[in-house]
Length: 214
Image (cartoon, rainbow, N blue to C red; front, top):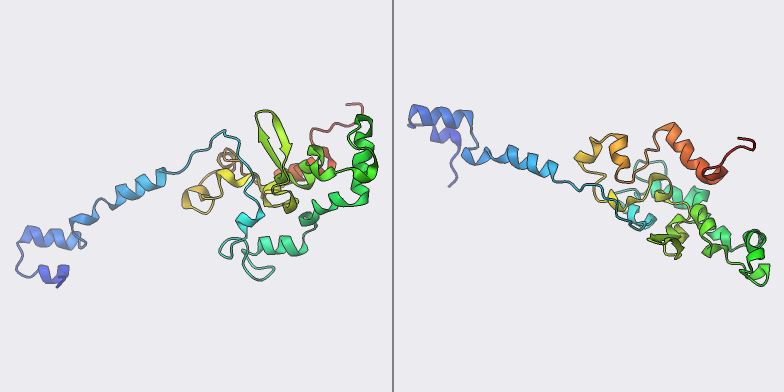
């Protein structure tokens, strides 16, 4: 039968009784604080490795951002899929307007024999904005794979490639990091208005663009 500290105090020597009163859990409880400290410091460090997108589906679990009910906290992925036009950014690359635009841009290179055969869904320049998840990077640069292109302008298009923070961004240590520290993991701090606008401008205006005459 398990004994409680109160029962052990009866008839115990004064020193032992005092120890049990001050430390009712017994000596085994003392290493707990160092163990928690070690666990808190044992978190993944940011790396410079090139990693692929994890896709919108990686955020869609009901316990994450795919909970039921638009407008509720945690329903971001469902709102994105049902109401956000960014979710259709990749699909528009298959329409005639996109084919004609790609044809006019690349016809001098002889990429396609006629505009109807243009395939903007495989063009790096188009995918950078319309389906970043459809690009993969290696030592030679970006290449169109179409792997997650159908995500359109998904979660990682705005919040950054999640490969380095997906499994940790809900932990206590992550919540204590500054925006600058999170940026080391590839996370974009969209709660900052300037950062958010800069991210939107990359596609809706152009990245590294300059005004005429400047």
